[in-house]
Image (tube, rainbow, N blue to C red; front, side, top):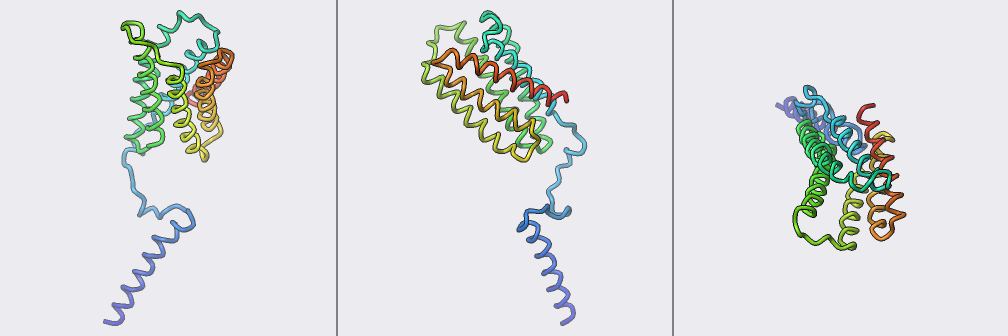
Length: 207
């Protein structure tokens, strides 16, 4: 009986050590205690799909912001952006959530929603009699997205340098666009930053 009790206590001490020590020194948990997502091993990543959709639409819109193409191109860019930059990114985000990649899912669905909302706004401004937003309201809207992107950038500090640069340049882009609401020269500079940001996202997607 005493030997059985000693064996149980020993097993309990080993279990406690195995469970707590990895958490204390930030090493990985033992394999048998890790939550396993069965979809990760059998489902390919949608990262390249989302990155190429983000990259191409960002490049196109910022050619317009940089005054490299005519303002009459906005209709083509918005309609294309609603589906490729919006709908396709949301699908890629949901795919990543299914795989267990919550960060990728949050990023793709959020920026996909941004594109769909932006496209809908531009369409409503044309087909309805809605008043255009105030400059202050537009600047605040862009700043909020800048803060959101900055938080995403912080989440990439352990990722590769290209991913970090995409989020860092996108953060800069949003804040420059906010500042460019009252200054056309800053708006043009933001366009060039956006082209560079989109190009890196496209490189990351197809690389």
